[in-house]
Length: 331
Ligand SMILES: NC(=O)c1ccc[n+]([C@@H]2O[C@H](COP(=O)([O-])OP(=O)(O)OC[C@H]3O[C@@H](n4cnc5c(N)ncnc54)[C@H](O)[C@@H]3O)[C@@H](O)[C@H]2O)c1
Image (cartoon, helix red, strand yellow):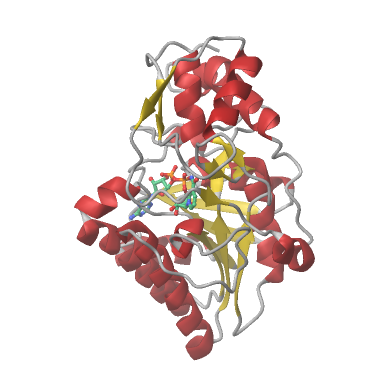
């Protein structure tokens, strides 16, 4: 299949392009390179453009005639979304509207969408199952929920075949070193902990040490980006005309912030200073997926997501492979 991958120059998108190519598909990346990187596009052509630019998007669709679309393109900083909500709605919701219109104009009916556990807000219990209430607590989460609503309505109105994948905490890097995480600013825990290990920051702040969890720090469900990538390939096959489906992508097992820091010290062999900081508003104590539905329906499982493997591949990316990948890098 020819697959238009919006946001394919980003972190999860680039790993998914590799998985698509390995499965015999052709990923055509459509990306404005706002947070993505041209060097991360290695498995098919790059069309540079914005999802809100209907002319450029339409021309790319006509040129490449994709049979399916995957939409990773979004702004994804929770804090920034609370300060700039209209910008988030324009990109995340407006971009999705533009994409659905371009799909309709070009007879493309199949779409897989990057949704998020942020759509659940503060869950009443864990593990989270797909039919639990979705009540986001920030504009970023709202835009992801509206994205799902748009898809649901397009399925009903136009026979679109849509799958929304609700990722928990994406982490890790391609084991062969061909892709990895490169965000600036970085806000995700594992790369921040590893930056502290590499001496790029003095310490890591632990927001809240008095939660009702075994060690007092928040528990999150870390999912290896390679496992996310394989779920997208499986989701393309699971798309069914007129049907909206949503799946949690996580491991079902959480790790605490303190556990991640301790494991990172072991994997890297470096001392990592941790600094206790006050709780952040809106941080739920536990966010853990129930991934059983994805297992049953997509035949998918998180095969690479034990925390040690996540940290090891992220550390290898940061200390070895990234130097080669970046423009001007050695080798
Ligand atoms: N990283 C996570 O832990 C996580 C968790 C849940 C959901 N998600 C979602 O997964 C998706 C990918 O996340 P990521 O970490 O790879 O982010 P990323 O920032 O690395 O990738 C996003 C890509 O989209 C592109 N883009 C942004 N706006 C665009 C626009 N208007 N037009 C065209 N391209 C545009 C960016 O340049 C970038 O390449 C996002 O939708 C994010 O909300 C991520």
